[in-house]
Image 1 (tube, rainbow, N blue to C red):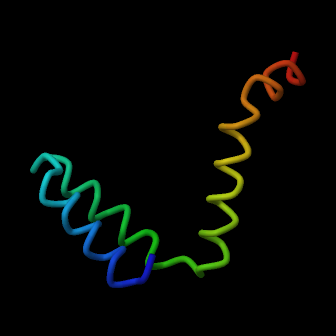
Image 2: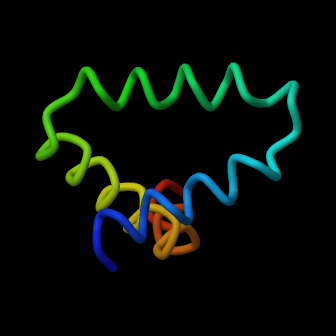
Length: 62
């Protein structure tokens, strides 16, 4: 997906987000803006790993 397509999809979704959630979305986007792209990518990968291996991690923790 191109950058323009991604931004268009984001705009469509934002139009459907409840009004009271918009300040949280804005805060999240501003926070992303302050971090280097590599850190965001690493955090995304870590989140994916944690969600995919949740059961395994829980077993290891016991």
